[in-house]
Length: 431
Ligand code: EPZ
Image (cartoon, rainbow, N blue to C red; front, top):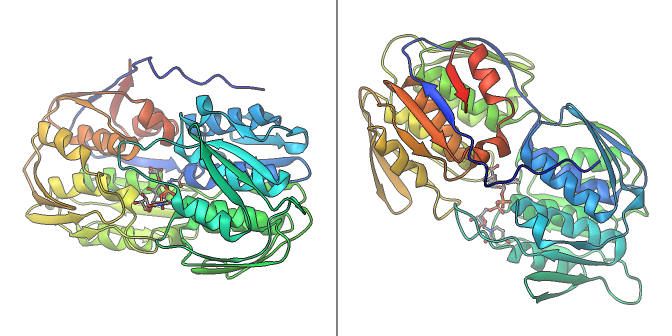
């Protein structure tokens, strides 16, 4: 089944009436976007049907399942369960028309090359938050014996002629790259011989991919560390896998609870993924109680305390939570700094927050924030996925009404956000 891709030209908007009412109640986290995307790509490596559970209903998931269908897979989406039959895949070319919709499509490069010995994947463009090159992905594949050429905006990758199989090798990343690590892991699991990958990303989403591959027969040691040792196998089976919960969606709701001085419980969590964020949110004065699979947060009516943050690879503070936490600091009782070390242009939400009355000064990769008493509703624009999440939570507490446009950015990463926020007492609707 090929789901239709929402035309980006449609310009749905969110209208949010700010209020002093605290968010209260229970919200269930959806599956992790940044785990399900590599896991969907990894089904290309499997020799039988794969059933995924806890899949978030997001535009990015539809974009990637449409790409898998264009390669010859059969896909059935039933709510939060997705069934992929990869056995019919026979096309090694991932077209620009689909790849341009989502940069993470580059994740099919490693699996196609590992399975077929050749791959043609359109180069992802840059995006709003930075140039985001894929040089580390290509260097890693060359270390596994691939020859790579760039022609007409496509990556052409070939395994060694003789075997049409990649060979085990040593891959050392120059910097921590999440999808770079994921692409190379997927390429290595079917290579001939042993691969060692150094300076791996340790994000929980990488670990979720590794757990799925191991469950289907891959041989990978060092799970969760920066050094992985992978012994190539002949093939991977199929089977069922449950996707981990989305720690960034969860973090966004936790920030909303602090901003509205609310009391919410988030269910279907894996709290150990959130230690740094929880630590920082506790410093704002929030009380956070953590269970096996839930997080309960309460923020009383006392002022929000400012907290300095600096983004870095896991387990440090996640760059995907930087914009949302900036809103917490924008309404804190005092000054703070937010340092972004991962992407070169991830402060575009600052301008939009300033239009709502925030007092933020950007100096290079540092934002200096002077907390204000309140924000005011305004017409604002989403510039990228997490920035749009930050504008939504700012609007919840702004005085008056906020209209947010270009919310296709939001729909890429936040499942059912209006329903979830309305259930907690927010006044939010899509027009
Ligand atoms: C992943 O992007 C996430 N996306 C991003 O989430 C997240 O912000 C990012 O990791 C950092 O955690 C998915 O997992 C689908 P990187 P990725 O490669 O893999 C540079 C969201 O909101 N770099 O870890 O593309 C790069 O420019 C998205 O869900 C190279 O120079 O990020 C960046 O500065 C936004 N060459 C840094 O490394 C390369 O070959 C980290 O990028 C690869 C990366």
